[in-house]
Amino acid sequence: MDAIYDAAMRDADALIQGGLHGLIVENHGDIPFSKPEDIGPETSAFMSVITDRIARNTGVPIGINVLANAPIPAFAIAMAGSAKFIRVNQWANAYVANEGFMEGRAAEAMRYRSLLRAEHIKVFADSHVKHGAHAITADRTIEELTRDLAFFDADAVIATGQRTGNSASMEEIDTIGAATHLPLLVGSGVTKDNIVEILKRTNGVIVASSLKEGGVWWNPVEPVRVKAFVEAALPALER
Image (cartoon, rainbow, N blue to C red; front, top):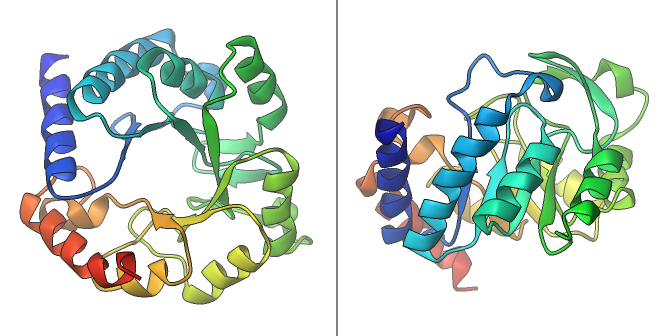
């Protein structure tokens, strides 16, 4: 575990020193991902320790994403590690994911949040989430699916591409943004080349792959890429 802790701390330091405003702790190395009911307590335990160490070291807002689609462990980790929000890939409705049939878990998750007295921990929820097929909800528009997130008390909406590293189209970002009063972020495929155009339409971005060595998500963060990304974003941030 020391190697994992050290790698996480190095990435966190590189991102914050490069000028990013916050971090998400995610178990993206747990491929193939388990369905929520199969995620063991060790995941929550390890992620809580890492989150606490990063929070104490950086002092920036931190979010939690437990893959795949596990908001209840995410709330527990966020509470233990002083995180500010969780990301949930399928908050409402259902779809067929890489892991199989995946249902929205908003009802049980919000009740669990109340049990923890953790109402201060916000929910960032994906709309038309990547890595899956939406045939089950094909008779409903992206606008309707986005409105469902607010109806089920999400605090922010995330637009994504088709898979990790792929950006949502500007048309889809605009469609999702027009359908909600909630803050909008893009959570996939953000690069130094499209950051300004995306920030014109949104309240922020979640970025990982394009800041890693070679642009590959499982590699370490590359400080030069972080610096170039932040410099490219400055015109939009200064608006």
